[in-house]
Length: 187
Image (cartoon, rainbow, N blue to C red):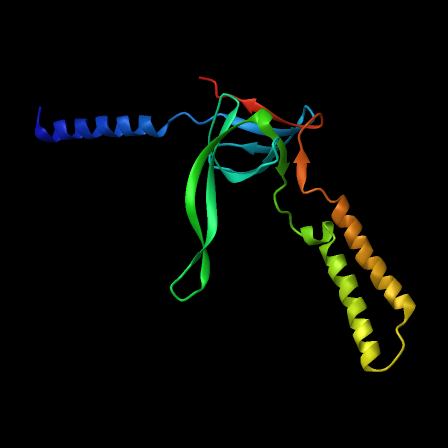
């Protein structure tokens, strides 16, 4: 056997071993479901998760691994760090790995949506209160009376924003309607 054929055979063997390592088995998954049929979100290793535990602790991090009904999460401790010149910047101080069983999760925060400032009423609160302030300042500056109907309309717009803010849910509470389902990888 020539050295070229032997080198080609070794290269093919190394390539075959490397390709076998690339096809590694994936991680288990946890699925957030609404009722028996609708899947809202699938959590795999590498996805971000933000939830409240039964004890009331807020957990935000990256899912590192899912194994036997438990989530292993990398929690990043971010704090303001100061420079020599007295300015500050956000820095990751530490990374910790924590384990949470799916029964320990009470609520899951919804991801940010487009135009959420309308749904949560922020734009109505800002618009109504800003117009009331603007009308009052203009009336005092021009020495004119404050019009009660204008104040009533701007106050009702701001009140609508406060009601939307109270009604808008930022989390999904797990229980009868929403639940987490563990799906193991078949081996």
